[in-house]
Length: 575
Image (tube, rainbow, N blue to C red):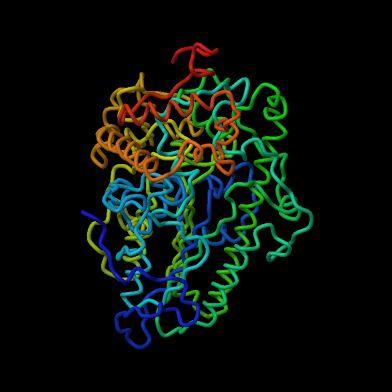
């Protein structure tokens, strides 16, 4: 059954009066006392980075600390699909990634069962998006900044990468860095001269512009009806870029640099993610790439971006206070996904480890300023939708998968065992699924690869092993069984992995049918894989032949490869 369509979803930034033109909304009682909501979502923020004491408090976060001091800080909070569009599709709908059936932008006759990659999300006419529900219930709504929840909104880089997940393209790590699909991992980051507080000469001027527009709207909007304000901030998303002013706020001497294992010791699926992200340099670039000072500086620039976002948060708090609305406004501040920030020899998101899959969140309700607490109960982004509706006194639409976190805000228990995340798109070599839950008074994470038939699961005790270095799956089969049952209780991961492989195959076949000279199109200079797929590359014909093999063979879930070169007879081991 497709997601429900309707005109109420056609809501944008109502900058003039807080209401989308042409959309009827419920009559609002005079002096409506329901709470206002400010919902801020920043890009790419590792869930641990807002915690007091992280990296010896190398990141100054005075505004987030102030919200934490009068709200609830969530320390086991997870993205349900840690990449931009699928994540946003889940929390704006309150539904799990595998429960977002829609028509793909490629083929109107093809129903996609979920938000599998950055090309698949919500249809534009989805009727029950969070802002639409609030607007229909009488809230003034203002949305700006980054949306990125819609199907068909990303480039050929995104969908071709996803649809060829199981293609066995030729590569040689030592000679060329393998099969890199990203170009930013080897960067040293950028520190522009100047900069200053309040967005002065910022390298993230569009985020400051969005902040200025939203805070101006708060000042001007009608205070007799409650408001919902959302801004999506792109800052913190790679590239790693900041100004000297913000870089100088970070004490690099406090930053711990993650240790890296040899590539040959990585899990095959981690190895492939490292290669696909361009984080496995060829031999002639290895010395500069592996320098510890470079990793420390990349982290420092990443933290500088987080510190600058904190000042943006302060602007919203100041605007609410200036409007006299602080005692009736709820702040919900979080991120869409994390960033590996050089852990496990990776950057970017898309992987099941906490740096990528966990996100920070604080909820501060101005009506209850003394509710300071820290929650370590596993929670997830799809819980935000029912939580905001619950706090606003608005009835939730049917079909939500998340739970209201109101019990945790009020010091009660949530009554749920675990949370689940998954991803199936770019920069990975197979689908993956994770469950985080409490077993024997410890918080464990289970990771399943593909449909479960090629790689054994991984199990980590997140309390004792926060860096996820020690796999306990062999020594704790009891926990694996319990966590696997939790995961299967939410998502039939073997069936979903197989369905995604079929989707990849059908999509690739449709694209090649619709694209004249598709072989040349795959080698286009503007695609990120161009250096290894260019017509003058020695492997070009092999890569074209591999796409043809995939099209002739049909869909299949395949294991991740561990060989340093492929085909293995050209230098690597056959694995």
